[in-house]
Every structure is written in structure tokens, then in C-alpha cells.
Length: 211
Length: 211
DNA sequence: GGGAGAATTGACCAATTGGTCAAACTTATC
DNA sequence: GATAAGTTTGACCAATTGGTCAATTCTCCC
Image 1 (tube, each protein chain N blue to C red):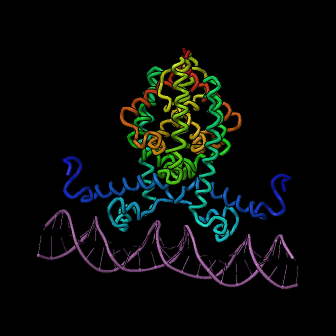
Image 2 (cartoon, rainbow over the protein chains, first blue to last red):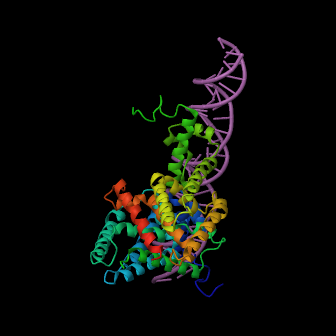
Image 3 (cartoon, protein in one colour):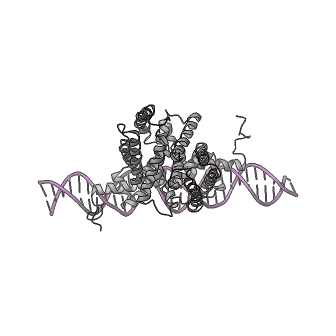
């Protein structure tokens, strides 16, 4: 009975609490098994409710999956906004990498859902990739190109630089299991993670800053 | 009827041809759906044989999955050997990154199987991670540390540098779908891929080389 | 406290799952 | 061409799948 987030009889007592419990359980199960591998029975079990009750809140497995992926998408858009063109290149890049790393750390499950969605061909977020993400990348590429022409960054193809950033932040979420195995069975401590984050920022900045 | 790899009646005619067809189909299906999401029926269908015949060659889904993951592991070990300590740091790192990028390009499905295995907690390759991979990383970290103390590389924690490399090469395989969406619906051309590879090598080298 | 709507749930369903099996078919050997 | 071994396959099975439904319980308002 921690003083914190425990209302009377766990969070299953209210409608929203239940919906949230289903949602969180679904995130975990989808992240671990992908859409096809996930079962509504397992999700219901982890949420601590009967399966029929889950289908009362989310009529189909697909609807539940959509709700989950749309939530991940929203988080992605928030982190995207941290790439600020008004700042100097070093600041903008450092801030953006930092924000994405923090996001991977705070919500690895979200990253994994994204990854498994891409793995199976992005049937749900495909539209988003082709519209919003394309637009985002185009506008950011323009900014980076400007910085290059101003001599602030080394000549390069901007998109492959973004891939480098996305790859890394994704890795810290998706490959947590591998990192744990390589870290004496322990997850990265807060200090280790901060070291890693700083090193990623430093390495990539040295890699693209001019001078 | 291409003159190439088509024996008399497709490759299903011989025992090895059949086994190979099952194996390849299994790789694709496991990569796309993960272990749980994959079905033996789908694998058999893609291999072009009845399901019962699949179970004649591989008695269980698990056995087939093991065969597939062990094959991926072998490829990993081969690429690992391209990190050569006798070379100068720049050469060793460039060669290693190049080899891993080429591997991601040549066998994206292998990378995806690896990723989905890690995502579900590495139940099959867990042993390998804790033994062989730990040893590999330790010995390579020692080499990198030596280079750092010789003033050839910038001070850093070597393992996070390897994570940067692994993340990137993994990304080019696992997120091909995302890259296609961002590339007007086309996969990276050979030229684009070579540009990306060169840029990754240059950026990371600038990021860690001293001077 | 009674009635209406919302929420909960065990029992159930058709379809799909991994896997079995016996019967048929090939292939090599004598 | 007989026989034995290896291979192929449709039919089948119990368990699990996503989802339904009617019966029950809860909640709120009068």
C-alpha cells in the first residue's frame, strides 16, 4: 500500500482505471509478441480482468492495437518538435538526440511497438510514414542543408544523419535485453545511461560539426 | 526459365532443395511475425509444400526456429571477425562498420530475426549473449581502450561506441520499410546505400578519431 | 427502494493452431 | 520385379484463437 497511485481497490475500480490497465497490458504484450503473436487472453490476464470485459472496452484486437499505435505516434510527434531550427546546429542536434534518448529510456515499450509495426510492413502507421514523417524529414533536411551551406556542418546527406540518430535511440529501447546481458545482467543504471547519452551526443556532434 | 538456379522442376525436387525452401520460408515468416505470430501453415504455404511435409523435415516449430536462429548467429560471428586489432583504428573501425552494413544489406531478414528474438527476451540466443558476445565485447573493448590510451581515439566508453555501430547496421535492415516510405516508395538503390555506408563510416570516424 | 442504463462475466462458438498418423508413393538395392 | 527404406500427403485431433451473448451485478438518479 504505497501512498502513491493506489486508490481504494487498485486501479481496476473505475472505468478509466480499467481502460488504462487494458491499454498498458496491451502495450506490453504487443511489444513483446507483435500484433499476430499477441493474444487478447494474455492481455486480459495481465490487465487482471476477464477476456469478455476487455472486448467490452475494445471491441476487437485490431481496435486495441490501433489505439496503442496511435498513442505511440503522438509521443513520436512530441519528441520530433524538439528539433529546433532557431537554435545553433550543435544545440539543436544535442537537444534532439537527448530528447529521443530520454524517450527511449522512459518508454521503451513504445519504441518496440513502433519497431514491430515497421517489421511487419507498417500496415497501421503506413499513412503516417508517407505523409507526416516525409514532411517532417523534408523540412528538417532543408534546415540541415542550410547549416551545411553556411559551413557549420560537414557536407553530407542529411537523411542518413537522421537515420543514425533514430537508429541509436531505437536501439537503446529495442535492444535493452541485449544490453542487460552485456551489463552483468543489470539494466543500465541512471548514471550509465547518462554517460551513454552524453557520449552519443558528443560522438555524433564531432562527426558532423565543422571545425 | 532462367538459366540460373532452376534445376528440372524447381528446387523442390531434391531433399536438400525442399529443406532449403522450408528454411528460407521460415526465415521470412519468423522475421515478419516473430516466433509466436509465425504459423507452420504459412511457412509451408510459402515453401510450396503441405504442412505435414514440413513436419517431416522439422518436427516442431521450435526446432525450425532454432535452426533458423543458429544460422543467424553463425553469420553474426563471421561479421564479428572483421574487427581486426592489427590494423590501425581507422581501418579496423571502417572495415567493421562496412562489413556490418553490407551484412544488413545482404541479409536484412537475418537481422530482423535477431531483433525479434531480442524483443521477446532472447529465449533461444540468451546463452550466446551471456557468453560469446560478452567475451567478444570485452576483448574488443580492451583493444579500443588501448587505442584511447595511445591517444589515437578520443576518451570514451568503448561499449557505447559499439552500440552506436550495432544500432546503425541493425537499423538499415530492420527499418527498411520506414526507409522505403521516406524514399518515394523505393528501396535504397545500390548507389544510395553506398553513400549511406560511406557517410556512416565518415561520421563515426570523425566522432572518435583523435586529431 | 425501485427502475434504467452501464458494466461485468462465465459459457459458448467457429476458425485456426501445432502436431499426428496411416496410407500411398518413390527410390535405391538385390 | 520384389522388397525395404525413405518420402509425401490428406484427413484428422485437441488446444487455442478472436469474438459473442445472455444473464447477472453494479451505479446512479428519482
